Image (cartoon, rainbow, N blue to C red; front, side):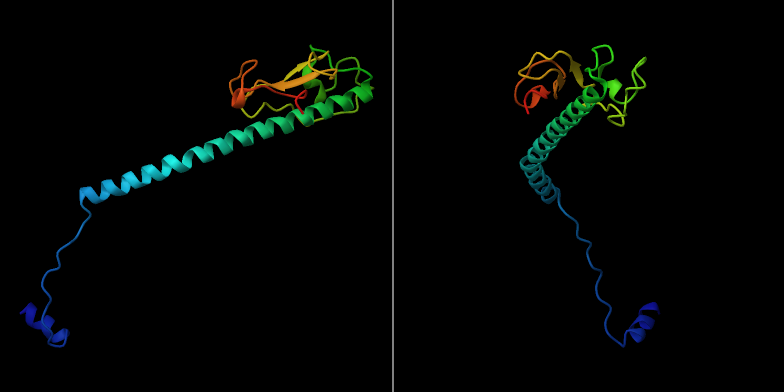
Length: 156
């Protein structure tokens, strides 16, 4: 009876046979996964090196900003920050010299792109600089080459 009713609703057309459900085979899925893996292997290193380059460039810009802030501190205070004061004196006034201090010279002393503190030394030992400001770079230790090289104000 149900078939007869369906024939009448469909205008007398015969009911199509059951359509077989089609799915992807395991081989087809594996081919797609291999192709995606090859694409990821060729494209991913480009993005990783771009990220590293961006971190190095950010560290260079931070070092230049810190150097500029130390120079402004020197102009106002007639001295460089001491090793004990470090770079934090650029954001907070030094004890005893609050009247001469015209800061803050920077909003805050942020860590380098790798999450470590920037280093400060006065007097400087590199080149013609009176002080050194640097980041140890990606490896977090002194020295290094290429991506792991130190980034300092004597290099700019």
